[in-house]
Length: 125
Image (tube, rainbow, N blue to C red; front, side):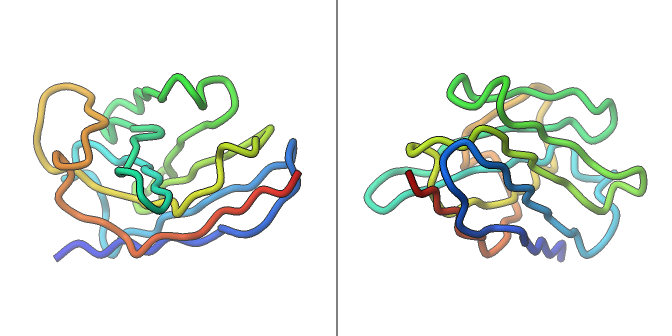
């Protein structure tokens, strides 16, 4: 059973930066895709960024493109989300997720098999 643990959330002023980390209980080579999602109360889980673990290829939601960067470490046990220029619309619970199958990028939350417990991001204006 793969376990994912997020960290790095917190409170930051608008325009500031945060880096979220996701630690996997074992190497994520077998996880084809790793993604970051976010959710606010009353809304569905929104895909933010996805990385293909083998190639390092990435995709982003339009709302974060150019501001957020997803990356992984060489050992493929850590996935990061660097968030710059945070905006008032970015606060949410951020989740790390792993997807074991598929042949194309997806930001649909139901495609992902494993989830972390989430880390809260707050942005003050």
